[in-house]
Image (cartoon, rainbow, N blue to C red):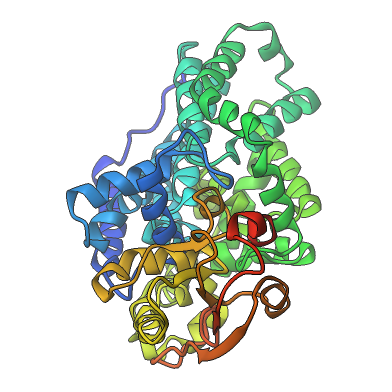
Length: 481
């Protein structure tokens, strides 16, 4: 359907109501439990503003710093940009459905399905790079739908700006651009390569992301090593390659599969839009081979819901769609902190990130209790940025010094001073034996709610001093992933 043809009216009030409801639900639960390990890391990274970090571009730490400056201890405010981003994704899904020919009912269905999508709710609940990747991809595909259907050439400039800003939040947008280019080579429309618009978009995106790329180049491209670590299972949310495709159905929502599969089929059959379907297929293959996380494809599902909503609505019996949407509502219990924290055990087994928002103040209390029994001048050294970020956020009011860690950007912020003794948290015992003159176990961390997250059972060890100054040992403790 070309944009020059008559389009259905936009169901503005209905789609806005759906998006607003999603936003209100996210806002209502945004202050429950506590900070995610990544959010604690972003808060500290925001205190060390740079054009890049080993594992991410600069945008999200900058947002964290701004939110922290407005209200230092407000979890709701920190997550407000994510709530607004998820609301925007739902709005865009309804608008895309209209551009793809959906009538009012189809537009509302696309928005509702997007709002019940596990990816959208999960990333809308937390401040993360994935949140803005989702918004960026959805915006880019919404612009591409217009361009491919004969929209104004100046839309390419807007596409370039959106791509560039998205890349400053998450580098996965490069994968979308590359896969789209390959898809156009494979199935067209190849005449796009004869127009100036695509090249202007790429150039504009390149200019906007150039500072981050320069930072990466000057620091040896650590983002590549981070990607290798994730592919090897080095992240808590990594999944094996064979699980990537099944997780698309689980994380999007199994009851919503008929809608997005209908949309994928519709795009494959549409000569004008076929390149978007092939882009999905190319990315699925790339992420399976490359060991990507299941959510890496999440930014294409609003498009698929938009493409399939009216077709499915027309083909299904009247009662089927309400049943599918109603059956999808339990996702709220899985991705949002609806239950009391002590009842989250079964949920944590399904949703890893839920566990990483529970228990940080208690863990820091336990660390502080151990620390204050140690000699003055003891430093704190942690295995990962979540532990270090929690100490840096909650520790000052408990009399703790700033934490050190070799994990990702924390490794750039330096080792413990001189040959100071350290309280080592979660470090590999073999690494400590090789690096310390003497070690003394101090117990383990325990979550008072009984949730078995990554920190439950973490060891505390007193290292009386390094075998040589920490600066000379720091390369042993640095790691990416």
